[in-house]
Image (cartoon, rainbow, N blue to C red):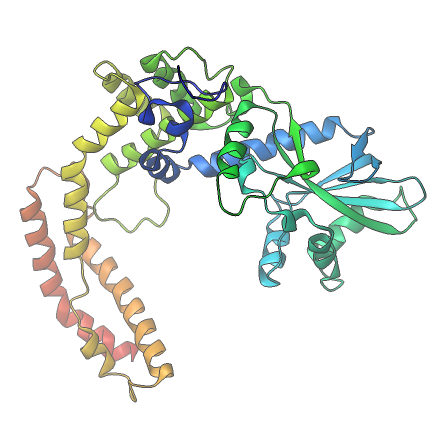
Length: 391
């Protein structure tokens, strides 16, 4: 008889033979996070929480280990760069939302709420009274203080009271799985009333995320007895496998050498076509990823070889020689800055000489590297002149 929890699904197609184990598979997590999975999970859940909180305006909202207050307004902080910058500069934590309402008297109640898709990562201090008060004590020009003032203007003249906050997590076996794993850890603390579970529809939660386009294809390969349209554990797993596909597509198509600061976003239709082609030969969704990564070994190796070949043809000793008192901390910083500037000049000149080098370049890798090194040697005299000018 299986010892798997009731919310788990066991199947040999899954890494670890279990849906829960598959979600936490380190290799899958690495590939999928490079494809933006964790960011997408957080963003989609934060938007779901915002929509849910908006429907709760006018209702009674619980205060942990206390009474209730009437929710009047929801102030979102996580999408405000000024709030994030302010918190970072002052080494403070900031919650995703401030819930604003009225208590039994004339006071205005302010409560932190944080969208926490992964309930095993709850950190009570993030929604504590002290965390909010610290944000509000930042000088009068503080972004959070001004946003709160604007939010309460017109409906309250009473004192502002900050109450203990809450974390918003999915009302789903997914949360049970995370909490069960956390209980086995050495520093686990039960979230208790800090955790508020929100209803969630797995079928629509990730619809706005481009990788969700691949989820039905990946799920059809496995044909598990649960659907990602109905089961959040399955939805998370297939979103992760889909994000991993976007990462592997990037590995397959990203240039070996280019100066583009922002990579060109993958065209979902192109990724979907590659996945559909590979799905015809895959025995499982995870097996598709493993085989794809294996196929990319030569490209990954070539990209590293090219990266190693594109090294500045001016040594650190030559750069240090242009800076006096090279042993001092100030001189060391100057040498680093000078090298960084010279490297930027070099890469621009090298790109002009070689052009972008793409992963489907027909030349053998050894020929590409010879061409890079030849161009690099020819650029050395120019770079030495540039070094003299910069110093």
